[in-house]
Length: 479
Picture 1 (cartoon, rainbow, N blue to C red):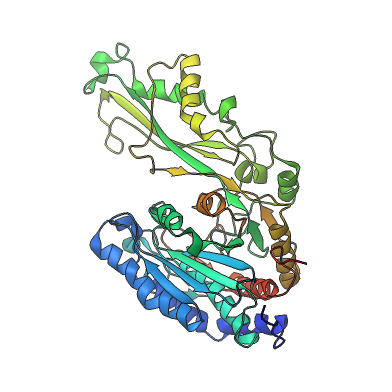
Picture 2 (cartoon, helix red, strand yellow):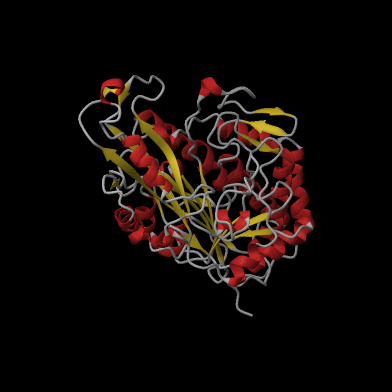
């Protein structure tokens, strides 16, 4: 094994990361990356796929090569989807290997709807906010982690002290299509001891956060289709059943008037002691201009953090009946509700739709049909979780606390969904996500932005963490 480098210090690495943002380099790099219009929601459009390829070829591959990584760009196994990059830096086969992750694709720019900055493709700083599509999700976040890696390499005189791999995909916003197939084909190339990655928001702007997995999602439609065409509401009112009412009553049997889930089979398994303890001191903060928690809504015996990070929730995403936006005097023939169950690890996913069907039948809602998405990949995410007491979680928590002097929040499962099961189930590694955004960043919406003070904090904690990973005390090293 190579002798550990003695040059530099942890504090020096943190200062280098801080200088990177204070000297303007972060904004310059981010501006170049935001300017590439990597809208994966336009796939399989050839121009959109080409732009995503350009992001890897012109930005990511050269940046990683300059850091001493060997970048490889893989074609996506699925036609019409974006390429995937894996950058690898092996210093010693005996050292632990840390896998990073980011996604360079973004949602649609929605150019005509921005009210701040200069639109989606030109970064613009106003006060402590940097606007632009991808600043928060996820170009800004993997730019932070790459800069922190560079800071440690420079401070250690050209070494990290551990082996590093970094995956950048270009299709996260459309379900990471093809990533699982690629990882399975090249499992040895992607193998690691732990995934440490960044996406999503902190629980609070000033509190470093560890997210250990994600809730899964299962989308489906509830439909009441009674007849062909609508009929005059005066001549037929009271004579023809209205599908809107029938569907509304069915939905009301699933979720109560205060948001409580009424179908026992759809509820989450009991929370473990470790999960409950992790969530005990987490408050949900919508930010200065964000929404505030409706305390009266949701499971009555759970705290807000437990509802979103440790429980299952059923939601209506869209509901239509008749001709919304231009109603006519007619009894509509059909009503449809687009529904979703967000669920935590341990939920019987194969029984979600059958459980809904049994419930509707038991409650007498025989006219309501449950229709799964047309494709098995539409609206489907698996639930995953690394336990809060896992040694890697405790290691990362201690490092972040040392850098920030703040007790990090530990979120067992994020409220949203991501491709985490590829790492936990296919690569079989523990996963620790360290988000660098905040909940009111307008992610997936016009006026997306990242906060400068939070970015500075993120650079500091990541530089400290990457330094600590190069020491001799990680869970993957033998005593």
